Amino acid sequence: MKSTTEGKRKRKEQLYTLFAWMASALSNPHRLELIDLLVQSPRTVEELVHEAGMSVANTSQHLQKLKQAGLVADEREGLYVRYRLADPAVARLWLELRAVAQHQLAEVERALDAYRTRRHEFEQVPIGDLQKRLRRKEAILIDVRPEVEYQAGHLPGAIGIPLDDLERRLKELPHDKTIVAYCRGPYCVYADDALGLLAERGWNVARLEEGVAEWQQAGYAIESES
Image (tube, rainbow, N blue to C red; front, side):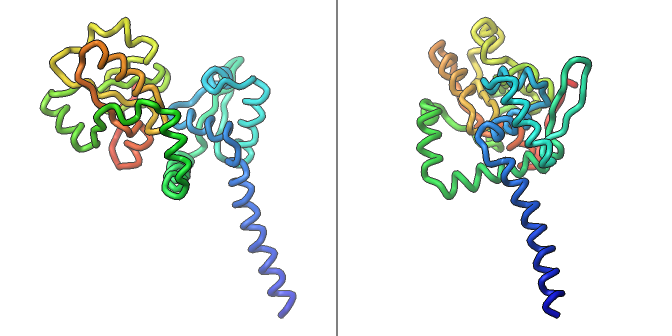
């Protein structure tokens, strides 16, 4: 009887060891940033290097750790290797991790305020209110993420204007409507920067805090150019 109990205990510990192995793959800020980028769209190693500001060697090592844990998958495209999330559940895991951290750790709010210094400067539009404004043609929704992310998936009706292109494309935006901007979600500063520029040029502006991942998590569909 004792040996049977010990055997069950070992098998149970093996299960928790596997769970801990996956958790350990996420216990690095650089790997979490790579997950966050891959939530937006699949990317090559070189594209991830550019976005995350890491070396090719470090980026590749972190991606291999995530791959070994079953969190990301890759496929070769000629000379390049493109990475993507292994399953939509990985995106949900990332969103839940962020939500729990923000709820349980007061430091997250302080760090977010330090990063998004204009966070409380602009009106924040809830999803339901945004949909009403768009139906009434009272607002224009712009996606200010990089083009590759917009192409991979964006909110219905959103116009893709990457932040770096915004100033030269201002003529595309009417002054008689509120310009609502969104980016990668509540931990992204791109929309704040875009709204700051637009407000200075005389537009009425607002921000949608949710990004594509949060939008899908709420049960809404997205559009794709692919």
